[in-house]
Length: 152
Image (tube, rainbow, N blue to C red; front, side, top):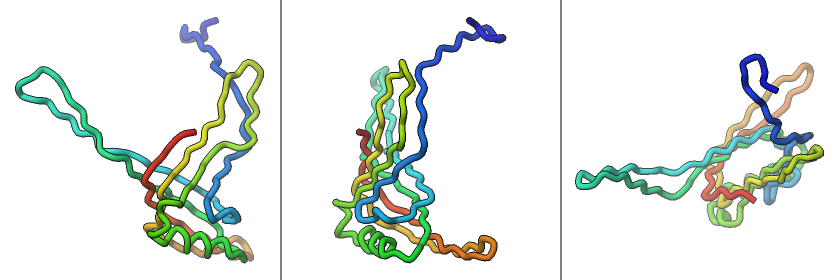
């Protein structure tokens, strides 16, 4: 049945999600509080003067991950920094982001998607001390360069 604007709306599916899981190779106990991924590639547009055609040429993909975490009484933050700041370990450094606790509603055809960031290496590190009432929290921010992004 159309709505008040004359638009028919069809529900394509529904599901419940209770969170997201960030899997960090070598940083399993890291208390991550935020993650942002950006990935892109250059695409050059060529319009030859002797043809009525357009040619697109793409370059390799590259991107970054911005990660924030709380620094607590754990070796995980030290292990994470040592692993991801070592350029020689870049090939094996991987981040995986996927939804957690997904429950598909009846009649929905849903598949869980994982985003896999490969070839990660640390470009920058920041530290911040935040006063929360009577408690201070030390948090960190990391910028990682990623060399591949795949979907599973």
